[in-house]
Length: 79
Image 1 (cartoon, rainbow, N blue to C red):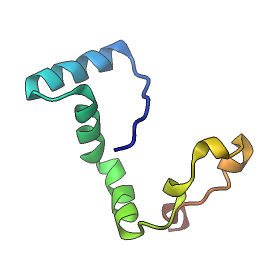
Image 2 (image 1 turned 90 degrees about the vertical axis):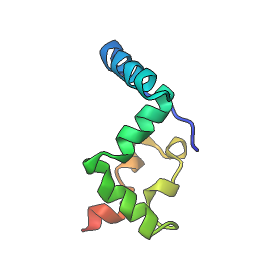
Image 3 (image 1 turned 180 degrees about the horizontal axis):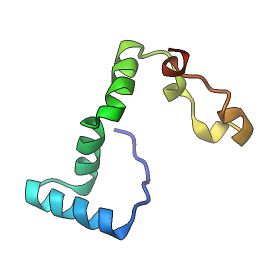
Image 4 (image 1 turned 135 degrees about the vertical axis):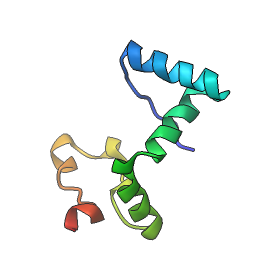
């Protein structure tokens, strides 16, 4: 697992907390589950699984300058 920080509205956090309590899980597990099930992200999840050694997911964004971030091209952008 990779640890990250997400900012969200109190309304969204409350909804996620209720969902976690209802399902007997943690808020972080709820976030991961909902993101993984997102139809928007399914395409990118498939790309990462198909090409595990290629793509922007291997780049640490902290090492890039703001202007050079736009130069990082993923396989999905080439389609």
